Length: 377
Ligand code: GDD
Ligand code: MN
Image (cartoon, rainbow, N blue to C red; front, side, top):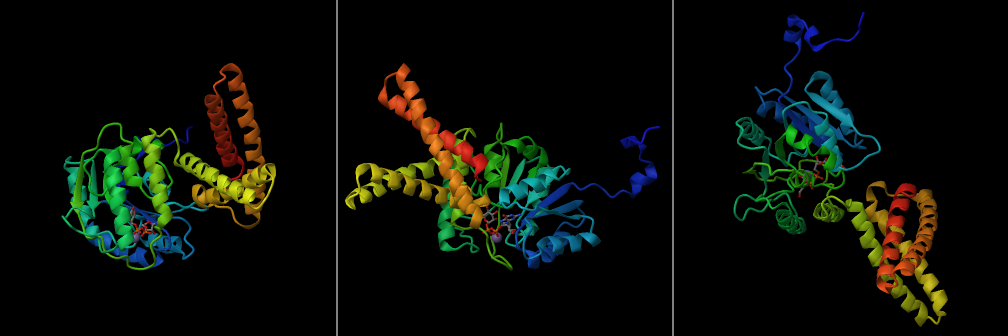
């Protein structure tokens, strides 16, 4: 006897009772949106009447209890799902996880704070259904001269710059490639899922940039309203994340965004080192002592800046900040030894000073990046 149930084992009566499987999954990332979820579900219900839909809320364990609020709704409505992610933070990763839960042919992504006009959803779906597009983006910039009122002046400028860079990199004529509101065929996400970065905010940009063949994109204009309750989680560090993603894409995905930040921080560390050395010498230290002190200053600032930017999603605090620092110094010390050893080796075979020096430095930097990634953060 076998316990396995084959799909064709479903009796016609059972099949008739099983609810229709959704044709549309709306993925909604949340962080501290408790006040907004019920209103959003209400609005979805109204606007998607007659459509088989489901909503997947992906909550990063919000302290305000958003997940509990969604689950309360889910007990009386089987179309509502909540994925509560524990110990993780990040918009792109949350959206990606939500998308991976879906078996529907179409996926929509929208914010929970009601800044995205849900009345666009049926039109987006109609465009995908009619086979006129693979991706429909709700754009904040489609109307000439339109300025989204939901953004502060500095965010507006930042957003414009991001859009300009994205257009260059994507080589797609799209006015708002960083929009957080879009609908896409699930297969278009599935085929690039493994290539998508879970860091940062720019999931749409990443999906478009990762496609093997260009997607057919249609944009619809909408007014980006003000958020209803709570506060935005986007801050200046998001811009940094975004630049990392753009660079990563420019390197053909070879280098993760983190590696680029690590290298950037290391380069700035060199400047810090030289300034410290100058100060040490001005204070009358002997060259060797000043060089040693400058190295410690640079290493410490590199550690703190990497902790704040490169690894901001797994930032170390308190006691761990100190043990992490000791590990970081130990590993970078070994990196220095490896750097000199490699440079010496290269120099033996090919006595070109800059080639040997660069090879050593590169090896040392790669060593530092990989070992501190594994052991410290
Ligand atoms: N799960 C999860 N994890 N959700 C998050 C996180 C996170 O770390 N950070 C933000 N969210 C959720 C918010 O709760 C909200 O539903 C949505 O993602 C958008 O976050 P906001 O903080 O409201 O972003 P915004 O309105 O400032 O930014 C909008 O414009 C950006 C482009 O400028 C959003 O639409 C972004 O998606 C968009 O990229
Ligand atoms: Mn918002």
